[in-house]
Length: 286
Image 1 (cartoon, rainbow, N blue to C red):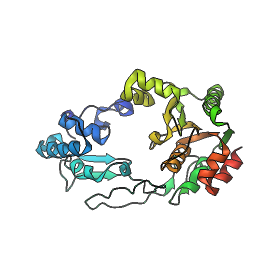
Image 2: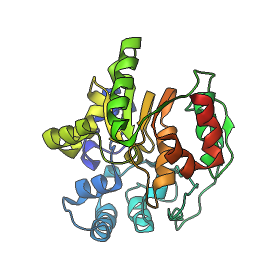
Image 3: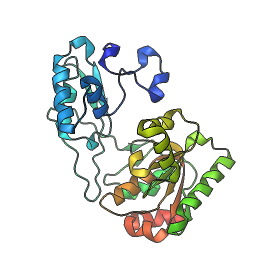
């Protein structure tokens, strides 16, 4: 493994792992570029700087392997600079996870400039079968529901002005049922929840996200920013759905819960956007 000088010590959940099992770096591609180059600027500048830093470092300070998740969210200009951080590009491990599904105007994922072995992973194991079936009709690729059986998805109708207060009440009900606060997330499809805005102002963006891993309270986030993340229980507050990312936002929000999902909002708004794929599951959830 590379020496600690290869990057900052990882934080969050991986900081609890034993040293021999702990990754030497955990963060975004921009975090890595900033750490290795001690610079900032545009993505173009950071990517070029990372490529130069990677090729100039001694092999012992580079990575044996890279694991890149949600690679559809990065631009193609990052691929070669990231590959330069490997000890040996010919034998090093590069593991890339991509969600090829797209909604509306979401651009297609950038293809890497080198050959990778492609493995299709169509099985859904994150969500209970009931939750997966609720959003499965919105997916652009077929899924196999392999998760455990769970509780039915619940839907709580609410007028637009009442969505956030109603969602807060649902969260309180979950806590009263015995759900630990750190297992619950309240996600919004539109404007951030006031609690999120306060945390970002008080803790800064990095401190806010640290609460997802280290905090002991309900986590508040915008659904689209929660992509790739999860919690056992999620309350999805549909407080606005518009623009090119509307369908993707709905899909992401519905798919973040492992065991309990409660959707709060106007039925007409959700069904107008999701169409028949979401109308029937919501009717059953009332």
